[in-house]
Length: 480
Image (cartoon, rainbow, N blue to C red; front, side, top):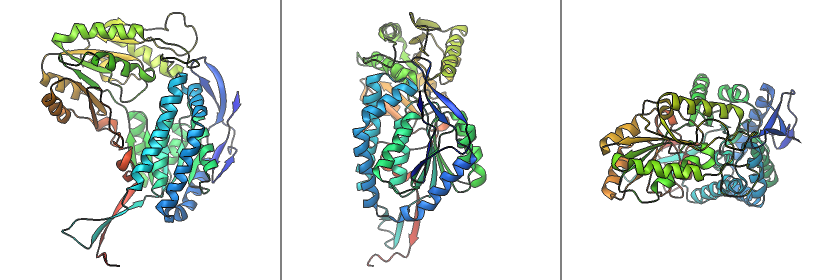
């Protein structure tokens, strides 16, 4: 079992101020793979103080200098990508190939995309031709607390750390205590890249501890959080007294509108998306709304995909799904599957309990429910497991009403060959993102939602602006 009881503060690895150990559990085996320590107030204060002291010099560096540091981070990250994938495989159960290629790989993609966007970014720009001496300046906020989840560790770490430091801020990262190993490795990468002391700091801890300490700290000027809506609400309340900026990327209950004229791969694509990462993605299309004339065909196609989806240990190559992250998560998913049964939904595939032949590890049977209505618990709550709810509809208007009848608003999906309908639905669906006919978001697009999904915008130019304040300047001498 690896000893990872260390924090990265002010450019050095330091021991925790008080012993408060926590084991990191491999969800494939239920064995301990590492031990970390949870930070105390003194650790958080030291990290914030280091970031505050580093801010004046770092914010005054040229964009070219900050860019060079991030390019070095990318170079080292690429070299250690397989190592990063192994850490994610061990800590949260992503299957081996997926952990390296997708989980660790998305970090490469995000860092490169931010580099590309930053090269074109104008920090001072004219307000417009109507006001020739008015300018808008984009400036760093200060010390930023970054709180990241366990389901896509490097996705969220790179979406927060990289734009924050590129734009001149200094940061304190608190990764999930459930999956901290990848962030410890990321801190090693940052250290090797030679970032000035105090610009990047990392303290392990839980939400009630370090998370709350960052959210209430008077010297932290912004919190960027990704996680559950419940935790996001708590962070917002905790941050209120210090009037800091709070950016939240929260849960989802995506609707996937499948019309009778959808392409032949639409249902299979949608089901696989739900099961991807063992269902542990906030943008998963977990409500499949199907036009009634195509409904039974879609249900049968979904059943087939579920039954063909292999479940196995993360520690092997192949196209399969691994376990969910923890016993707590497994229990929650089992309770919700049972709620679906109790409320009258039809189990088409899967169901409660462990997959056949498994007696250890947090594995969930790929599950499909049919004959769901939007008032059922499985249609209202974010399950965060490989569980799909299929709901019939008769008209386009009914489909939109069902899709929008949720507290969430992250990603919705549309499957139809009718371009006019697609365009119409893209505007009617209440979500931060709408993806249609299997086309993913373009490079540099922002990721984020509305309503209880939070209103953060991460990625590309929007992801840079998220970590800056705009300053309005009048009387600018354009000839100086």
